[in-house]
Length: 214
Image (cartoon, rainbow, N blue to C red; front, side):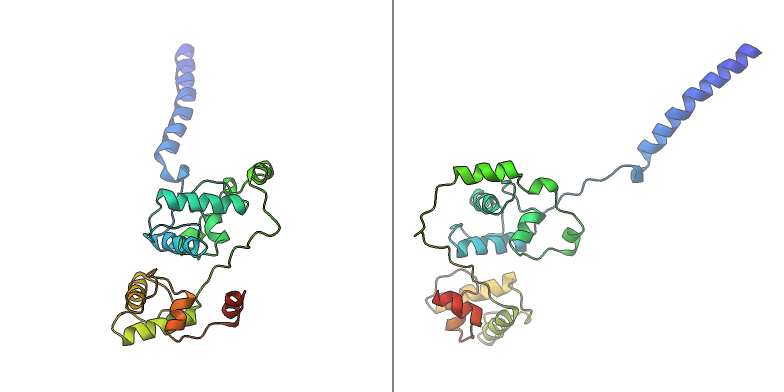
């Protein structure tokens, strides 16, 4: 009888931890899901337009992360204290002043997105020395929400746009801009740049006028 009780007790001790592990494995809440940060097509499009504006990117504005876009992103990252991943992570989008979606805001920026002090120093040492007389990079032109709304109103009056006056450069607005630019012998970019605004008789801001003068 004593031997039987000892055997039952030993089996009980073995059973409890195995059951605990099994229930943990079956419980989805016990496992941490890995959330992957993904940029939207609109964000990629905006990045391509920004880089086209400063000459970093010369390809088409497709909204897709092609090799040329990744190369431009790496260049930007190396110049702004970020890890040269070539991906549009949260840290890179924030550095570019591009608005995050609600779901993206819930995903914290990875510490690996930022270059270490050693990596930054190494990048600076490899970079060619700049002459004191080197030409400064022109500031990136950005249309205001009011200017976008005015452009949408004008495009709508000319039958080039059917959407609302949202103040955002969505796909329909860009298509309308391309048609307007083509009709007015302006380089077709689908962006609301200074030349397009002037052709539309939309007033520039003081900052935009100052940048143009410089």
